[in-house]
Image (tube, rainbow, N blue to C red; front, side, top):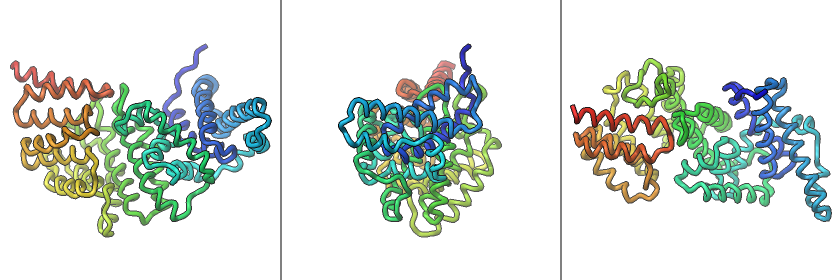
Length: 418
């Protein structure tokens, strides 16, 4: 008898529990890499057994028990092989039952793990990569795509980060106020990347992986509860809510991509929009304005337009002008070009895109060609637009994006032939 796939409830449960279980196992065994391997084995075991036997009454305890057993077996094996090494012997002396470990769980384990992954012993890029892996559950390939970095390079970075955490001896506890201030930027950036990967998946048959974006929102709420007066934390939460509000309208019946201008805005989540607008309205007047607040303000302008043609593009362009001054992010510059085209015409946007052609971070990225195709179409150069739609389609690993881009090219070809 073969087991059936996990349903969405079980998948969401595993994703929510994974960082909690990892935190509990790290707390006891103090070995990040070994604990993560053990938890991954427990998650695989759950994916095989739960569809067949049902979700256990205490799923977190079940996962901890399996992970602790795997790690205990590993340590005993190491002890047998390296008896003379006191470090391994000391670790085995600390072996505890799964019940003991579960009793030690801190309600903030996920939050502690989040800040631990952003420890000062790591470079910002390594901290973000490790957090995406350990807390966000992204694959190495997905993280590499988010960083525009080769997968092999990212795998090495994550491996080195785990070793750095181990050798640093960092305690598994919430950081001090000073440590928290040092790590907060990396924590917010990783949550931003997790959300983006969930909102628009970099690869695969589905446009969205809502469990990732929901996990990012959940974790950002936790950070906001910890730091309620931090304007950028509030700005990031507002940005996520205002963006996620459009989720139901972004795909059609067959999972096809529906662009912002064509979406049924009655499907947008008004509760999320109201919460996001309230957050950004409360934070903007506080004086210190950051990139997440400005991006949230852009999202609010889009969400408050009853129709696409009602969008206040001059205001969006002004916000992107501010963003450009404080950020060297090429995606910000790409969106600035779109806003400029909507206000000043496609030629102005295309001129700004030309300056991005030499930016190595966007070299070969499908978004640059997709935007160029759209602006060329706006300007009436359909042949060039078709060519760039096709180039963009060939450069994305997302099937819904590829299908959408090829459909745009085919539509223009049919219009030209007609």
